[in-house]
Amino acid sequence: MESKQALTSAETLLRGVKVQLKNAEQYTSELARLHKTAAESRLRAIESQLALAFALCAIAETEIRYSRPDEATKVVKKIRHHAETIRTHVNEPNHIPRPSISDFLKQLTQLEKCTEEIELRLR
Image 1 (cartoon, rainbow, N blue to C red):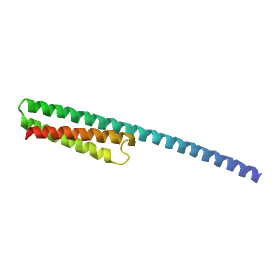
Image 2 (image 1 turned 30 degrees about the vertical axis):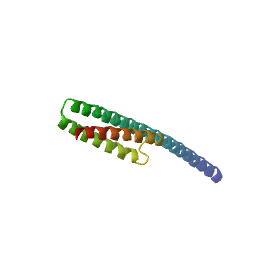
Image 3 (image 1 turned 180 degrees about the vertical axis):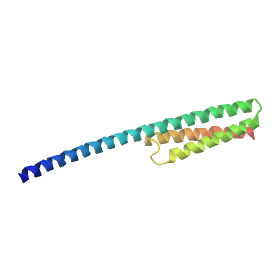
Image 4 (image 1 turned 90 degrees about the vertical axis):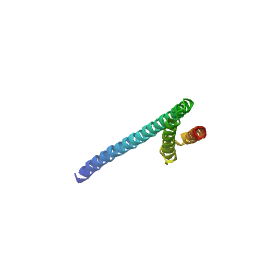
């Protein structure tokens, strides 16, 4: 009788361990999915910030074209701020998927070149 109770207790314990393992696997899977979703969201946010910064370059150039250097200077400051923020996020480890980093760094280089050209025109 004791061996039957021990066997039943062992079976119950085994079922509990299986449930815990299944829960652990579900947790791990869900956590991985959420990390991936978060990285993709951060990727899209950086893409949006870059698009905004390039749009600001066009606005600064328009301000120069219409002889409004003070406004162009304000816009350039915004562009610099965006570029700095983007660079911080791109350089942060595990913030965005690794394959995207080099493309973002190239775009940042283009943005800085555009900004420098605008600043030269303002001098």
